[in-house]
Image (cartoon, rainbow, N blue to C red; front, side, top):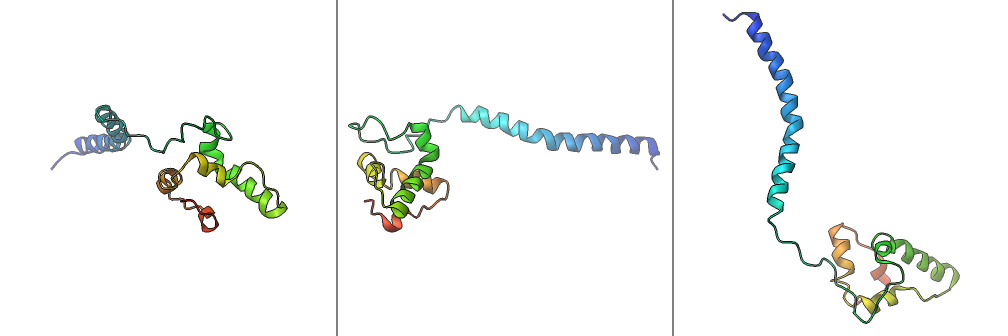
Length: 124
């Protein structure tokens, strides 16, 4: 029969080792993933580029990437509530970005978001 001292040491070692493995496993995975990720080929352009004849969007690219929905919502409010049609609208988007599938749907599908714009608006 074993004495209690070696049993107590094993138990103490397990109490330290198990949390250490749990905490260090994600770090090891990250390091290994980073090493293998370096060898991959960069992906092609995610979104369709605008027609080259258009130099600028209505706002800068970073703003449009993250806040286009706010801009379109504000334009919608102006048209629906006040009957004011300005220069900015979905028709302007369609001039530069010819394909809804290769532009709008690429991002919206990636984030599982399905806007209701196209229930009313035709975008070929």
